[in-house]
Image (cartoon, rainbow, N blue to C red; front, side, top):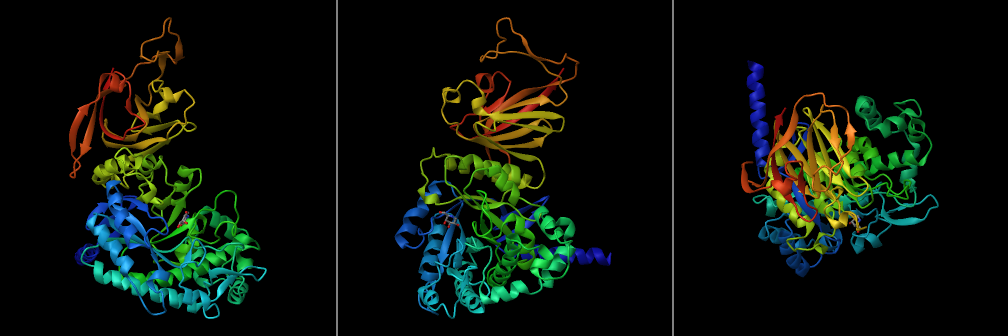
Length: 566
Ligand code: DGJ
């Protein structure tokens, strides 16, 4: 009884505390989801190009466009050089403008602190900092060449960066507390060493030759069962040692240097994150440039918040809520899977801007319980209503109450197809759902005339037995009984049996029930998750009950009811 009362009290305190915050992460089933102004939220976002928030006129011009494009959130750089142009003199004009313009255009803001590091480099540090390189030292290559990368080992660098960051954030806290326009903060941008895998400055050398801090070895020992497979492999090389120098514990190669560097970058970020948490309690994250194209540490920004370094980052920077990938290379679905981990929700702060963004967004929310998706340089997109991202965001915005309700329940799947990956089979509750690219159907000339197939994709979620939502663009789905044995004659494009029709497959009919389409309705989703009927799609629009489909040039939400017959 005593314990029950205590737990209730604790729950009450936690709930009240959560309600005081305008933006926070919470566990929902198997997923981590975002809550904004007390409602579950997904970020339908876009990140501004690097220089687009450095000019009042640009901010004024761009934000209304973003609203027309269907965004609910904009990711905006905050520049150290323009915030503290002279040491100890602060100017928040741009930040205020961003927040006000966002409010006027019904947008939330995620600020990116371009402080000591931006894409590895320190180009956003103010001139007074850059010039005083004795006080604010750089990193060095193995050959002793100084880089325009501030040293993560310098207390002076940290103090200067952190001072500007905390002043700036305190200003936001003062002006935004009541409104909650700023919903997350990214600290620095794409941290990482270039040219070599680690810094070779004097301080770095000394620490590299010292013992691995016990914080890290204890963390590895304690979390051994759940470590990232790459970390297990690396740590296992020298027999899972719990003390020793970096080389003794992890071996003598550049990947050990990367782990070392990650530990110290993350330790620096942890101090920034703690400052932030005490000032304005919103989710905090760091973003990473990918280790793609066969590059090695130092060729890609070494030691950034990459998936294979997640344990080092978690250990040294526990206040950071998640690591976020910036995606510009091929293999979108493989990259996103690497960052949706049991201990890391998926949030994509940067994705290459393109006509496939609309279906990519559907995919990550459906397949990975993502909390946000944001193409980069979003202001270069179109604000025509037919722009794929705009169509997609408008539908996802409608779907948000349903998506957030079903996040973490393992009832959703994402679909993503191109001309190479055309099909995916889902087995769910006795059903075999075969989803394909829309151009696997013969009716659109672009499917066979050599045109590049636009990507198709979407999401499917089960509402009840035999009741599904299918949404997205450029997809076709067939529903069958999982155990149905196949007897199928070759059909013409009209669905009739071809003259003299031969069996394309004949496993012999052994009885059992079949699945039919009872109805396919195009719907709008209301805020309470109920549906508003738009139109019935039957006859030619569902191939006389054979499939459910959405064309490549449109985004739709379909409410599908199935039935069984014998
Ligand atoms: C990733 C960075 O995080 C962005 O700021 C930008 O530089 C893009 N790359 C490339 O334009």
